[in-house]
Image (cartoon, rainbow, N blue to C red):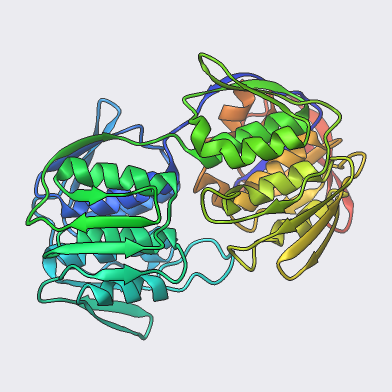
Length: 448
């Protein structure tokens, strides 16, 4: 598998454009199944998860093509079908086809979805919401099967403001008969973008971005053209990369309102952040202060940026306390950061991070998407060379991360192992020797 070779010690500088949001495009792709026409979608991030979701759509008969940098989906001839289990297990968001297929055809059957192993993410909220719209759902033997002779508008209350459940309910209720009111709905910007997409198709959705959303069902949804919002997690990772390297970068196309929880914490930590005509400018410094982090649903601090923030706090002055309130198993990166010299103690959903003077390069493994990004950031700040393995996780949410960061001056290279020489690394053009700190020993490896 591919890996990243990260050489630390370089301050990031320059400007970079933020791509479309992964967590917005995936539900939008699922919602295209509701269209009786053609969906033209701009600013689509070229991610592995997007490829998987388009494969899922093709299973149902959708015709998909790229044209003039836009993704075009013809869903006129979509029909119910079973998705191969190996496809669904690649990505959690594959469960988002439940709502639209149930609304359009009254039947859907999918295997349980996969995705990053960051904690329990049951389908209970999805199932409960769809049942309140009148769906008959059978759950067992690794499959979810849903049937309906016609969804009916209903009052729905979510016990927790689940993003995925909110999205599935929005899509199902968009074509239900009557009015639905969803209370304690998720408020994330990606929910707002999905509602905007659906409304442009002809849906009647009010209140997206608040905890009460009203959906008036319509008989059909038509063609639409839409531009995906910028990715706030990718933008936040860039901000933290600048902070941890003491860099100076400008983010183009970032939405300040989507990043306020992170910006507030970075300013509290002593980082300079300003909004200018081009976007957001961040200037790091050597006097970082430790700050406490508590992850919460939007507009609280996002769980998807917690690992990257922890990487920053490993080199801040003082002690930071992290409380992870969304996923119970989202501290796997702590063990890998400790390999690099971080001082982190974990007890359940709490992590205590004492800042150290410096991190040291090591061989580490990405356990999930955001953990992988955190390890890359730590490598950018560490002395020596860091090898980040299992970067297929990172590719799910960051398009060619090594190229984007290289534009800002980062020394990061993607490595491909070849059968003929397990340490022949692509993109290296000169012969040199680098010491890779392995988990139990140091090994001297020649690079061609």
